[in-house]
Amino acid sequence: MPPIEEPESSATDRPAPDPASLEAEPPQSGSAAGRRVDRRGVAVGALLLAACAGLVLYGVLDTEERSAEPKRPTAAVTYEVTGEGTADLTYQARSESGTAVVARRVSLPWKKTVRVPLGKSPIVTITLDAEGGQARCSLAVRGRHVQTATAYGSYGRATCQGELPGPENTTDVVEPALGES
Image (cartoon, rainbow, N blue to C red; front, side, top):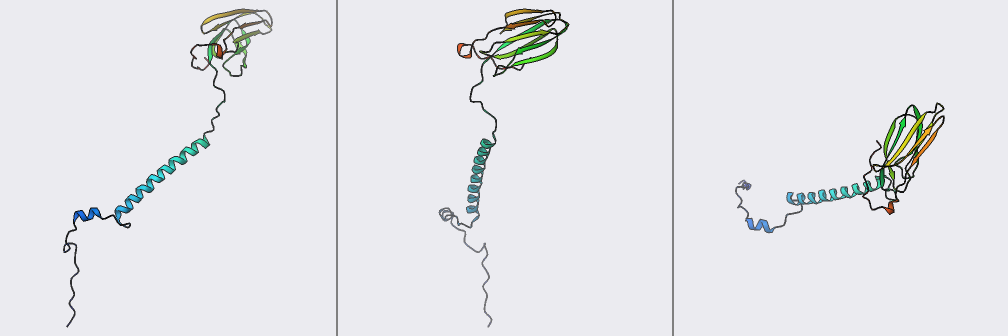
């Protein structure tokens, strides 16, 4: 007599598991739920690691030089040279070191408003060429006229100069630095 085979049980033949017992059982390490939690932890860890690496790279690659000394406050200074023809001009402009700007063979009339650091002396100098003539310089600090001078004749010279208080001697509000106009 041949052996009798029992049919394999299917999911429909098994009794349904008790929902309370499912909640109490921890997920097995190989289950899909356990792997999902692990993946989330790995993803969060990777994001934190990437954020830290980004901050370190930013600190290493940030090569902008920072001066040890804060920027000096400035004041608006207007230089004006009237006359006809051309002249060489030298004037103090926005510069921490206080260096002068030289402009050669400038057509007159000429006017420029610049920022000059407090404590530096705003100055404009006119030098006429061999043809000579007449040119007049004037200087205004923060809109107030300070000085006027006139150059005459061949290679004539004139200088207009003013004074700005030192940054430690002023209680004025620092004006924002604007580009030269």
